Image (cartoon, rainbow, N blue to C red; front, side, top):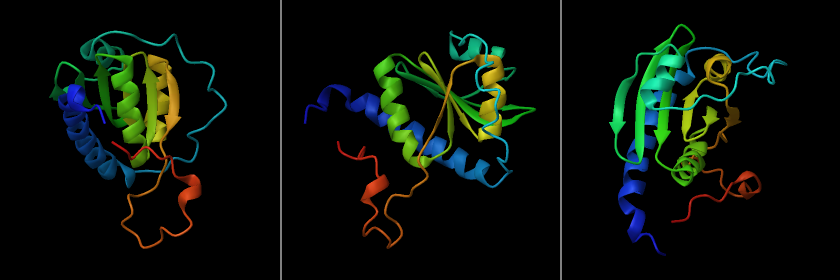
Length: 162
């Protein structure tokens, strides 16, 4: 229960997650992911590093900054590959906490050192060719809004405690 030291960071992260959830909801119905897990997985370049602007430039995106805080910077990007969210973090721990919470919203994540790009699998795969990184996939479950919760604990990640 020692949450008083990082309350501000958690609030900022939760606000960013709300923006991310809306972005993912808008993107989910926009196309198919038929070949998102192709065999080219090992041919990504060395994982990029840098500021949000440097990463965006390398990804060929003009970032639309949405969150500009000390612990988290986040921008919406649009390229020929599609729309995605690019975020940078002040700490590795902050990044991992953000990803753990964001995983509940589903989606595909391209993860580098203190940065993440979130979008459709097709977009993330294309970005990996420019930024390197590791692809992670979030779980696709909802937060109890359906009456189907009996017996569904088996696939639950358990990341909801504070």
